[in-house]
Image 1 (cartoon, one colour):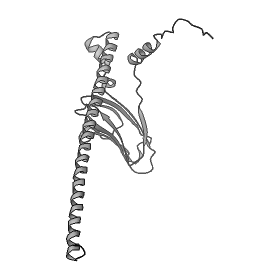
Image 2 (cartoon, one colour; image 1 turned 90 degrees about the horizontal axis):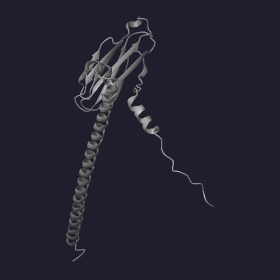
Image 3 (cartoon, one colour; image 1 turned 90 degrees about the vertical axis):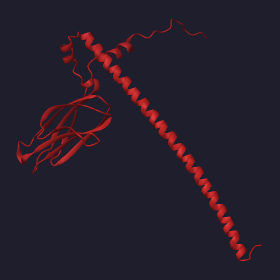
Image 4 (cartoon, helix red, strand yellow; image 1 turned 135 degrees about the vertical axis):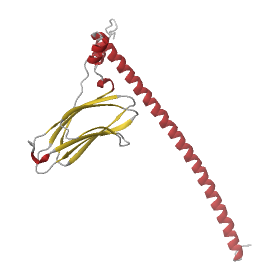
Length: 219
């Protein structure tokens, strides 16, 4: 039975257009929201690469109407405990800092007060890298056209992806070196243990031989 034949199907430009639309279009950034009970502390942690601009905006809704002396504090620290941003009586604001090294950063909200007070609603929107850059301001300063702005955004995004791959490659090399070093240590330890067991077995044989000779059990 012969099947129907025809010209090979061609892939249209839809996948490429979709990719360009995703890269060139505005990036969707979702804010994090959670409830903060009175006299409690909640922290968010995130790993961020070296030399990246980090920006954020926060808003803490107070539903107590000023009762109970409710106060909220915001503090951002790195793994070494260095304070990158701190705000007492935080209600609404923005922050920005540049990372000096690849590290784990912690954003902590703390609520203090007295009495029965409803939980506070905390809304946090953090951006870093390409997302944190204000391309509208860059366009005004450098007098760039809309297409040039999008090309600048694509260039920064490509550089960010390259840096991510370079970091992943570096981590892979470090993990491989650690694995090889561990295997070598395990091999040396196994050889050392084997020689120790052989030496111990030899010593036991000679000791038992002398013991039995002393008891005149063997000649």
